[in-house]
Image 1: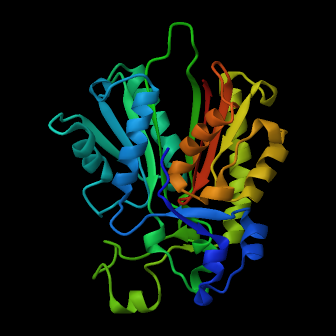
Image 2: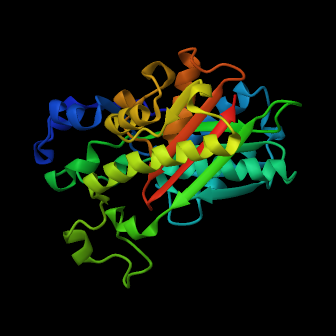
Amino acid sequence: MYLPERVVTNGDLEAIKELDTSDEWIQQRSGIKARRYVSAGESGVDLAVHACKQAVKNAGLAMGDIDFIIYATLSPDYTFPGNGCFLQERLFGDRTIGAMDVRNQCSGFIYGLAAADSFIKTGLYNHILLVGTEVVSTGLDFTRNGRDVTVLFGDGAGAVVVGPAQEGHPGIMANALHAEGKYARDLWLESPASAQNPRISHEALDQGRHYPRMNGRVVFKHAVTRMVEVSREVLARAGRTIADVALFLPHQANIRINQMVASYLGIPEEKMVNTIEWTGNTTAATIPICMCEAIKQGKLKENDLVLLTAFGSGFTWASTLLSW
């Protein structure tokens, strides 16, 4: 994982008069105390490079062992091409390995993990570098109009290497991916958009349509419901129960959501890892960041049954059950 050096506390946001917020208000609603923002000139690919190099090293591999890239983000450095190609150039130079970008927002890492799992099981690739990276801070509305969204997000990157499981090891046991587009406009960034002509206008800017918007109550309700459902789905597919789960790593959008999901599933607090208190919501990067933190805390051990679950814009939601 990699987080930019710039720490932004709730107190820092409270000092922005136009935002009209407070440390108490933010913590009460989300559990967040601080998050990281990029510095001037720092990009999502910059963050990804740090995380990917560490992931490959931790896997005991070299860059030459990697034969495909999957890059999950909702905040690409440019409209096109995708960040995966820029990462390929930075890490692999003249090695023309494939790079695929995944646009499933907060569910993007698990969608990418399911794709990597399928590619490896079919023999198409051997070692896939999967990274989730976000730079959201440069596109937030730091006024009261954007407060509900702005206080939640942070920047960061998390990466893993996905490869063949050892003989007899179950590896990735089940994946489940879902979407429900009728709620897309309850959490979205409307402009600029190729669906509009012109893609960006003075009117859209004046109305703040280039900032993300969220129907918080709808998102909260659906996130809890769907994360519980999809967690049970992957357990059923693998023929396992909640009692078998050693560690639950949920997407980090709101500590209240995660607490409710764990409660409904019957997962005790000691079987969870939450990082949102000091990272905020780093969307596609939250789950791999949680993995790193779980290892650091000594909570993630070989052969542990691990449940990953996420919910995000789209609406999309997903879950993976794996043996570490």
